[in-house]
Each structure stands twice: as structure tokens, then as C-alpha cells.
Length: 286
Ligand code: ADP
Image (cartoon, rainbow, N blue to C red):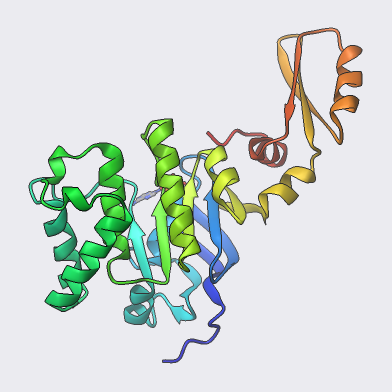
């Protein structure tokens, strides 16, 4: 079947998922353009993983439709699956096998020839900076290295869309930045990226656009800067009667003026995406 809308990498139409008593997704509709780096942001339990699992064919939607490069994820699942690579949140490499062996198994699952697997594995290990660890058992690698191997594995069959579920969870800040650089590079090399995160700064740093999810509902979607600008550029955090309250201003000067008449302790800082989320939901992301 031909792809219907080649410019749209990911499309959700009224996607709903119910697990027994839990309504995990409530009529989610969104589109991700080819080549975008899209961040799906929300607190734990908001439905991020469920969305990705539907998109990569690991669970079925209760209603609604999802497409990858125009292929319906259920009705045209073989084509849809070929479009994407998936890096789950939990580390699921075989720890006893070497890095190379872990990648090779994945290549076989995708029916890649022996020669193609060999070339592509060599290329990707170099790409992720682990060429010298090809023969190391995975159990000897650090958490950051394992995460990079999982990314290489997901890229092995040259997918056009890469799904990353909380790609830096549990990693220390320096390693997290290394993974960010790798993710950016993968996008620059032409792959569409759809990632979930509950780290605000990750979405702010990486994403062309972000969608906010809260309790299974899509709250807002847009470019990080536009979403932040809708509140203001500067935030004044104040404490009064043990209650914290934040005010937003166009300029630092306005924030200072307001602070000067405020009786309690305060601090002035740049507006961030967390402010946007809190102002829309009354809750924090992380
Ligand atoms: P997130 O990825 O944002 O943390 P999830 O998609 O994992 O959120 O979960 C969304 C909601 O669905 C949560 O309330 C979670 O408990 C529930 N849920 C997720 N997977 C299952 C499952 N297999 N069975 C029952 N409930 C589930």
C-alpha cells in the first residue's frame, strides 16, 4: 500500500486507550512532520509510554488511528514497523552477549543479510563512539554506554523515525548531555525523532516542538520558545504566608519593580517550560 501523506512522519487521530479501569489516553490528535525532533512531555503516568507502544505496534489502541509515514499501525503493521526504531525505557539488552552479538540478533530479526549486518554494525558502533567495545559483554558497560548501544540497535535497520522513551532516565547530567548530542546528530542525519521525557530541560534543549500530556489528555502543543513567550520572559517567585506564587513579566525590569514592593522573600529567573505546564495544569511535570 502506498504511503498517503509522505510528509507526515507520525499522525494520531483521536487516539484512545483504556486499560480496564484506567483511561490512559483520551482522544489524542497530533502530527509530527518528517525531520522534526518532537518531545512528548508529561509527568509519570500521563500516557507517554502507552502512546509510543501503540505507535510501534506493541499494544492496540481502544479507538482512533495512528499512522507512521502514512501507514496505519494496525491495518498496515508490517510497513509501519519498518518505518520505526524503538528504544524502550528499560534496558533490555542481553547482558551476557557482546555488544556486537546484541546488534546482530536485531539485524536478523529484520532479515538483514550477514554482510549488511556486519557493515551496518561497524558503522553504528563508530557512530555512537563504541567501536572499541564491539566485543565487550554488555554487562561490562556503563549505563550511558548501554543506552547508546540500545540507540544503535534501534537504528540498525535504517528506520526513518526513531522513538525514544525517556532516553536519559537515571543517567548523570554529563552522560545525559552526551546522549542529547547523539540524539541531535541522528536528527541532523535525517531521522525524525519522537521522544518522551519528564525532564523539562531535555525537552527545552532538544525539541523543535513539544506536546504536553496530563492524565491522558493533550494539554498543548507548540515550539518551546512560543509556549514560554506566551507567559512572559521573566518569572518572579514569591513566598507569602508559606504559599509560593509566581508572576510573569515581559522584562526583567518589570519583574524587579514588582519584587521591590513585595514583602516576602523572592527570586527572579527566566521562564521555563515547567512554568507553562504548571500554568496550564496546576501540577509539576517532574
Ligand atoms: P507514562 O509513560 O507517562 O508514565 P503510561 O503510558 O506508562 O504513562 O501510563 C499511563 C496510565 O496507564 C497510568 O495510569 C498507568 O498506570 C496505566 N497503565 C500503563 N500500562 C498499563 C497496563 N499494562 N495495564 C494497566 N494499566 C496500565
